[in-house]
Image 1 (cartoon, rainbow, N blue to C red):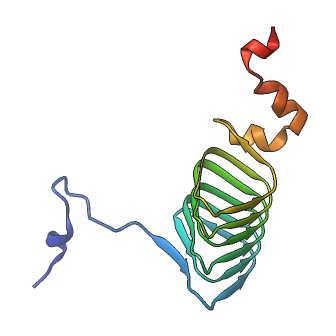
Image 2 (image 1 turned 120 degrees about the vertical axis):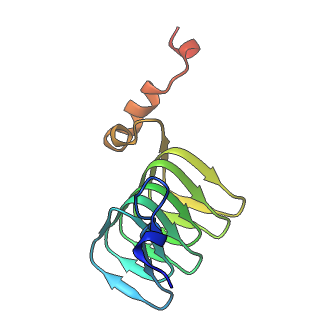
Length: 145
């Protein structure tokens, strides 16, 4: 009924859905998670979480460790630093116990954030600069006169 020809796009490439790594509710994982694709965490992860794609932490999800991701959508709990290259969304049920480094931040009413937050286009440099260096670099031009 179906053959390989049916799964090809107009340009001849095969159509594949994007890969998604899932840690289901009730699952506990210890160690480093490092993925080139998206990660969805509904269980508990103890250790560093690295995603070149989008990280989704559901309301039942818990991460005890540092996070590095291209994008992140957090509704659960993160205990550690969050380094997000592009956009970080904190849903109303999110609890963050750690510093945040991101380019763009969206926070829903009710989300809890316990730590400092540094925002800007170059999040790698933000993580390495001290608070006083960051404050000097982000002063308004009118303040410098």
